[in-house]
Image (cartoon, rainbow, N blue to C red; front, side, top):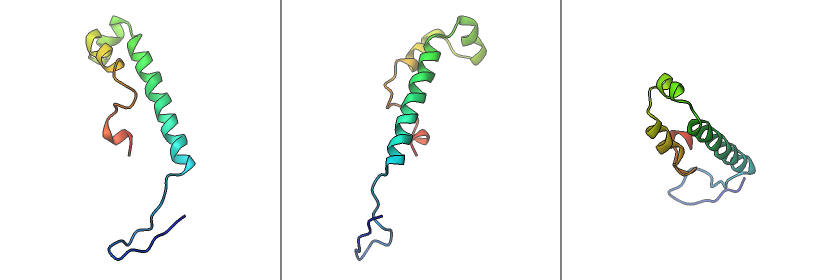
Length: 73
């Protein structure tokens, strides 16, 4: 880990690790799979989860990077 000394800073400076990249790629794969499944639900399955086919399509068509903020922290 690389640290830098600066007067107002008390936290060491860190850089992203490969594990961070692996985690991000894993998240991208999961979001892609979830949205593919959502796109292919039947009308009965839409009713089971309480959304319309249009809402499912809208969610499935979102870009992979467009996810809730709590997913990326």
